[in-house]
Amino acid sequence: MTATVFWQLVLGFGAISLVSVGGGIAVLPEMHRLVVEVHGWMTDADFARRFALAQAAPGPNVLVVGLFGWHVGGIAGMLTAVLAMTLPTSLMAFGFSRLRARLAGKTWLRIAERGLVPIAVGLIAASGLILARGAASGWIPVAVTAGSTLFVWRTDYSPLWILAGGAIVGALLL
Image: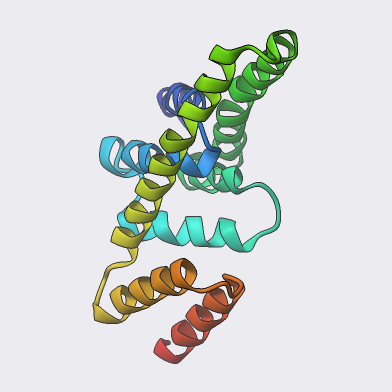
């Protein structure tokens, strides 16, 4: 991994981490823009596959950046991307939690917290659209994506049923 790529990972994921209201998955569209559109490190399909792999693994969702970093620069890229994505946010969360404890009960703080909810929901919805676009390589993936969306939206069943169904469809298509 060259020094230029190292700094691109640090600056890119470091900046993204600072706006990750709603968690790391909320900024998935910006991660996509960084690794697919700006730097061309991977394709839409590669991005969607790495995200799916990260979701299948135990642990925090944001660790998908480790797979992006691995793709770009091996182990050094993985460590760089994960630290750049988690360290700034962790420090901010620690500082904010101390500040919030002192400001508990303030009206303006409750208003600000409630105002962040629709932002987080919008960012997460944008993430879903980015992933759906990456998976849309034919009519079967589009149908599975649409059916999955409707299933999760309109039923109270566990999303694990969708994962099982997607695995079956994927196995049949191989």
